[in-house]
Image 1 (tube, rainbow, N blue to C red):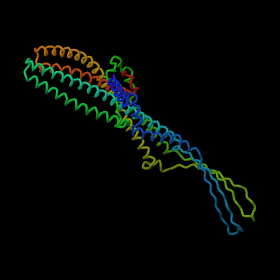
Image 2 (image 1 turned 180 degrees about the vertical axis):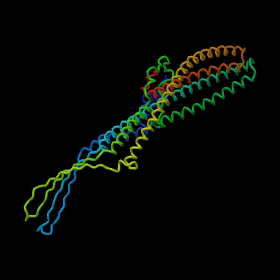
Image 3 (image 1 turned 60 degrees about the horizontal axis):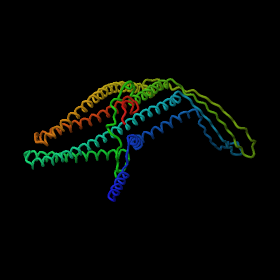
Image 4 (image 1 turned 30 degrees about the vertical axis):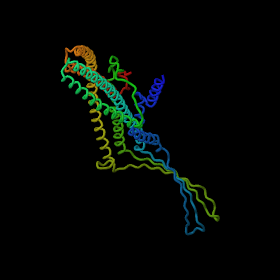
Length: 418
């Protein structure tokens, strides 16, 4: 009874020392700890502030000053205080408001695309490690099977039912299995360490993932209605094209637009004691200025208009290229998904047949009618069938995640994974 209690406490302590992470927790940590997204957030905040403050061009600039002077025929020095309010308006100042807003929207779209990329990478890393974990468990089971086969082979050899060669083959098979197990353990530990680093989890923390590749419901997978949706990359480029079009339009308008300016000035003289106090003086002035040199082909304004036009054409080429790439990628992923669905059905049948073949071969081996080489072939066939099933499940999950990203739909829309 005491041994049972101690064993239970040991298990409870071991479990409490581990932290289980599900897919939602992994995604949340990945988005929070990613350094690129943190930098994007700073840039996005700066552009939001700039867009909000761009309307300040309508506020007048105000200056105040004071001076003192004395004329040759004056008996005392005369001081004077001055306050001036000036407001200027031009097409470029109005265009700055639109460009600031579009620049913020373009940055927001680009940030959203980056968020989707980080989430995609986190989800694929999560399921990749689940695949590594399941495969590691599978390798452990194969080593256990190889150990049982070795012990059974040695027993049959001692009974004189099989030759010594079969015993040596069983020993080699066992050692090869142990070597494969060590290699897979290192691969799993490395993948888990990389995930911890990306999530900001201390390497000393015992981490386990909650989930399974078997939770994929193949029958629920459907890409209907999602193919026409734009990808995050396409949406970001479209916002950049809108900004480039606005900049081109504003650059052409600025060439022919004048600058309007209006100033209001107030002066208050401060006289010496032997003079009379004078009243404040007010003045209003306005001007309209037109830069004649801007219309010349080699002017800076014309060059800015040419550069804006080049930028628009470049963005249009990028947008067309992205649309083509997205279309090809969507078609390819749809084919991959359909292939993986059929492959999983085939693998399920293969596992069932290989398992039946293995059981019959084991019975024949125990009776002495089959040698170890035949048993090993049946074991390898069953092993490959099960490994192929796991690979196809992970391939299907990866293809679904990629298609959801390219289609710009929330993850989990096209395929439900429990």
